[in-house]
Image 1 (cartoon, rainbow, N blue to C red):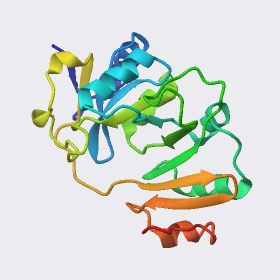
Image 2 (cartoon, rainbow, N blue to C red; image 1 turned 135 degrees about the vertical axis):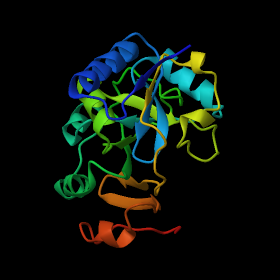
Image 3 (cartoon, one colour; image 1 turned 30 degrees about the vertical axis):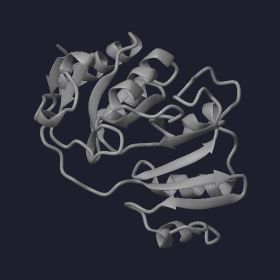
Length: 219
């Protein structure tokens, strides 16, 4: 059975202990469950191929699907992605932390496999805005992430509805029933071109307020 830790109204010392517990499980190659802004997610060390694979198995993902990567701060991008323009960096600064997911070319020397056997050469990254999750990321480094829902199904807001056995993960960090909310807006960056792939919490107009040339051809 997974260790279950309640974060609801947790005192500061218990909250800090939970952070260290989460990092310990991640360092040991375990998958954990934590709350993101509007849904529970799996987390694993992004550089642990077996742990990332375990996330895909739990979700029932098709072959070739790459996990998203969460980071604590925009500065982390320098070590895992190719360089961005000043304008693109300004865009990320405007909406991070928050519900903006960004697909960028990854550094070719990275020793990770997010599920695509490194064939895509790209990574989808986000800086989340959730207290416990952010604190864990600050201690752990980049983490592979995916919704705890079965692939293609609705997000899980209530841990009572987990589609797995609790013994399938190392630890569960319980923040009670979460509020529902919008998905992240997803953009793709290709050199000087920024394209909107999905509109969610952030509108096209808001994005174009920073970079007027952003396109949304299929929306």
